[in-house]
Image (cartoon, rainbow, N blue to C red; front, side):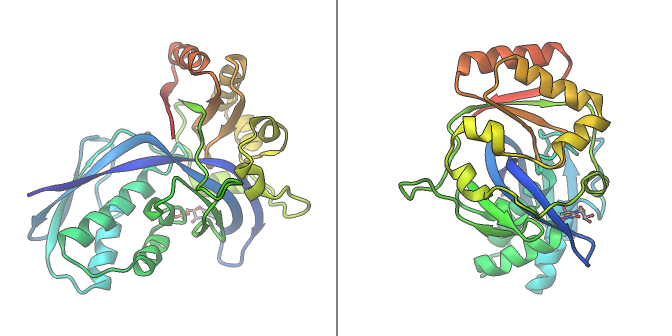
Length: 283
Ligand code: C5P
C-alpha cells in the first residue's frame, strides 16, 4: 500500500541577509509562510531505495533531496528496509519556493510512518536541517515561522491576540523562466546587520501599507537588476494593483499580495499573457 502526502511551497515575508559566517553560510532572518501550491510525495515498501518523478527533467539520483532525506533517516535509525519514492512534481524548480526542501520534509514524515519509527520532533528537525536550511520549516505545524541562524532556527509568529499569524491576502505568483542557484544569489547580496527593522513584529502586524515601505527581501534588488524577467514580473504585479510585491527567497519567483481577489485574478491573467508561469491562491 502506498502512503502519500502533499509537499506545499513557501514564500518569504521579508528576508534580511545579516552577515557571512565562517562556515560559508549566511546568518539570515526571515518569515516563511506556507502556501497552497504543492507537490505530492508518495512512498511504497520496496527492497532497496529508489525514486521516480513525474517530471523527466528532474534528476532522481543521489543529489535529489527526497533520496537524501530517506538515506539520512535510514542511517539515523539503522533501518535496513527500502522504499520506492514517487514525486508528482508541480512546483517550479530554482524559484525560491522551497519545493525540493518541502519534498524532503514530506519524505521524512512518510518514511517515519512507513518504517514505523519512533522519531521525535527534535530528531526529525535535526535531520531536516542537515538536508537544507529551509527543510525544518516544512515540518513546522503552524502556517508561518520566524527563522534565524541560516534559516533553520524557528520560532512561532503570532498576531496581537496570540493566535498564529496567517496571511489573509490573495497571493499571485509570477515565475520567470530563470532557475536560480542559491549560492550564486547569495554572492550578489552585500550582508547588512545595521539598523534593520524588527522583522517579526513588522510581519506580525499584517499591515500591507507598512510592509510596502519597510518589509524588504535583500535579494529583490540585486536579482531584479541582474535578471530583466524578474524585474518585469515585479512591474506587472505592481501595475496590476498588488498591495505588496516581493521576490520569494533568492528567486526567481515574484509574488504579489492583493486585498482584492478580483484584482488578483486580473493580475494573474496579465502575467499569464506575458508568458510567466503563474499561480493564484491563499495561504
Ligand atoms: O542550506 P542549503 O542547502 O539550502 O544552502 C544552499 C547554499 O546556499 C549553501 O551552500 C550556501 O552557499 C547558501 N546559503 C547561505 N546562507 C544561508 C543558506 C544558504 O549562504 N543561510
